[in-house]
Image (tube, rainbow, N blue to C red; front, side):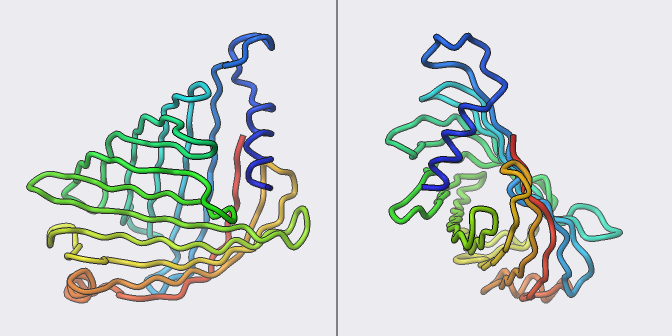
Length: 234
């Protein structure tokens, strides 16, 4: 119920309602920095982000999503931006479609995106998207997150992220099949509902050809990282 309550609270507290209180379908927006953290990786300290924003009305919204990672002293290693139209199809479930641009690694890649985002039974937050790119490339991404509340302010959040590709793409270092899998565990303390610092641990692993490409480039194929960052929304 916590996520449901937060959604209701976000709607009620949003300062973006352009219409008066009598409007039962006002224009709203929300910005959420789900992760903004430093990672103690084998290759050095990395800065990672996972941000989302949406604007619109009850059933129809425009979503922006971005995530990526930058190694200290180097440029952005991974990064993408998604622009999606979102249509509510059931309570707490949206159907989303649009465009994703991978601006790192280079050469950049563009994808048509189609997926769902919402709360599964037992309040698992799910974000699943399929992608169609150039030259017959296809991909899929899955993210599942759960929140366990020790108290009203202390929350443990396990999560899983996984990516799949249909074709080898040596230029950007991804291979056919499951390319990578990440498991995270973060413990945050909500100083206020809108701001919560956290610490945690993140394990990731690359598989198959993706691991082969990483090894050939002198990179890591698996790592356990300690993380520290904050979560912010308004």
